[in-house]
Image (cartoon, rainbow, N blue to C red; front, top):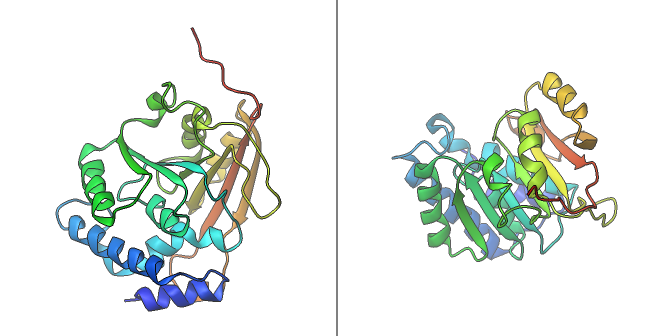
Length: 240
């Protein structure tokens, strides 16, 4: 099993130095997640020993080459046990995070994890993305929508548009606000084709997630998908 020391070394080897507090938070999260996984399937039980390589690292490895707006507001769709939201929150403590899942048992367990970790500005919500995105509380509120395992890419694209606020670029390394961020594995050519042809989509960027030390893990085929929407700089008009 690859533990916290291995995870720290991978991060360090890719220019991301964890503080002692951040390392402690990752280990606390691992323990709390695996404890609740005994009663509820938040991650595959067969994959518990691979928490750092297949879950924590897959949630944050895109940040070895990309950055996020430090005080961003983010919504994590289909968060399950808090992935990728909590690992990102540990690295960006000043961001405001909403973690959304439609399964109440999962959000209940995740709420307990968030409380025990004393994560500030981290909220867990039960509901369906396609419905909540149309409410006044959530519409056009977020800088980023992020998803690791919420469903097919073209569906996530449809669900996410109304959550996002204005598009704003900060330079080549920082992901522009108003962007959908999807961490995707496997083959999804058909989903990508449908996404690019969507009437709402302006541009789609697909990058291989590569980093120093990735030859040490088995679950390598991950891509970063960034989706920019048309008229992203214009506020969404609510229907009467």
